Amino acid sequence: MRSLTSLFPQHSVVASTLCSPKTAGIMCSASSSYSATSSAVRLAAVHPVPSLTADEISAAASEAFARHSAAGLKRSGNGVAIVWFRNDLRVVDNEALLKAWVGSSALLPVYFVDPRHFGSTHLFGFPKTGALRAKFLLECLHDLKKNLKERGLDLLVKHGSPEDILPSIAKAFGAHTVFAHKETCSEELHVEKLVLKGLQQVILPQHERSNPKTVNPRLQLIWGSTMYHIEDLPFDAENLPDVYTQFRKSVESKSSIRECNKLPVSLSPLPSSSLGEVGGWGSVPSLGDLGLAEPKLDKGMHFIGGENAALGRVYEYFWKKALILAMNPL
Image 1 (cartoon, rainbow, N blue to C red):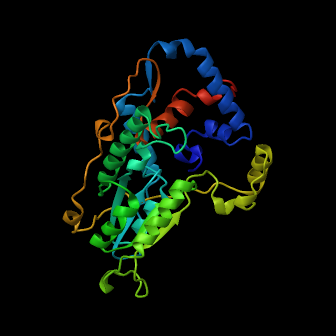
Image 2 (cartoon, rainbow, N blue to C red; image 1 turned 120 degrees about the horizontal axis):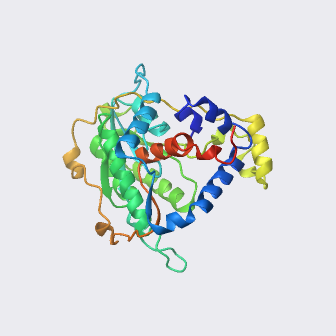
Image 3 (cartoon, one colour; image 1 turned 45 degrees about the vertical axis):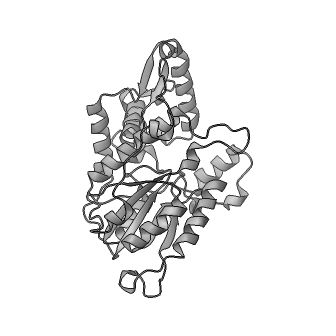
């Protein structure tokens, strides 16, 4: 995650306001005001978010993609690398995707529809994923697949646990490295350990090793889910300040937000073979496939899933409607 000013830096007046120490307060005030003054309207009907036309969303996304692409990037690796998408269903500023491209000559993106995510919690038996959240996720997957295809790739969608399937995919394609963004919660960390254990059971043929000393596919986890990188904090992550104000003042004075990662215009090629061994590309499931019914949307805000919609929402909120300035006019 990076600063919003880097996504649309041409809006310099708004950008300077976004960078001020009062940003968080302004955002909360503007959002609360907008919510309060329009609550009656929002309760009367369903309002999509972003409330842009398809052309406006496409234009905002295209601008962001163009701004975060670079034509002169070079690859330095060989062989096949896998990008394991988890909670980072985006192309823009995806460091795992960039590192995988640089460190390979062919790239295979993969996502696992893990049935555990659609089960119940250990305590009280609450559903982990309801129909609205699932619908949002599926929209994100369709959008990710589309954006990858536009850059010369595709998305391999497999149904099952990553630790059960990913090692066999790495073996089938002879992948020397699996790149993924690191997670922090217990269940996700447990899956990472199981995936690593499974990859250690895979023996790569000599000609498919990125390093002669590397026998098994590697799992390379990359931090990429916070605005401030964990390595740039002025304190150990285990010693976070108990009070937010202390945290904010410390990072504002002693840290800086990293620039966005720029990706090549084209991320191709895909691996040339072995797709048949893993059952083809698979498909994004429907809500019915997940045992869920289509949610009834009769009022409130409907957030549209996908990277393009997210970039459209940033454009709409900060610049088209200038909602962040609503309570703090310049």
